[in-house]
Length: 191
Image: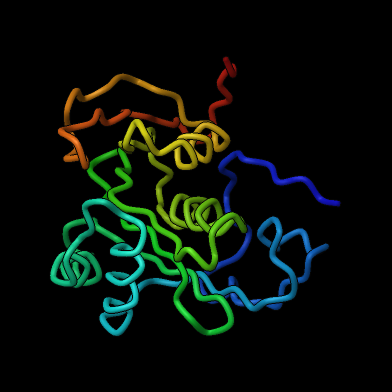
């Protein structure tokens, strides 16, 4: 059985090269995904309802459809959105923004029916692989209670830089945001 690895690498393929049939033993298959067709592509305005629905199903503070539409149409501001289609249906997305030599990950989500199959990791690899020139740093923040996301980001090589106390609204009060960063192409010692 193939083991998932988690370091950002340059994606070896250009736009349109991401659509392929993936089997469980394929080196390109997300871990745990048996024969599916995965297409990683730029998000379109037509994807906004699916993106908003996915975000609403997994986030305590989901974005509005208007925010997604803004992100999809925001190339001039350096903001980009990509979606993961599995067998023709949008099952995940990533929204990020390039500011000078940094890439900020604003939102990543995968539909509950497609979670734990490597899609978030593939989306993040894809987003970083598409940004040229390669950013000096990649930044994100995540709820302190989101153990799955923290494990994903740590597995990809992100390290904790600090916390924003009481940043996110929570069911009972507020919760911290964990600030994380990655320097693409730079190996870091793991704790």
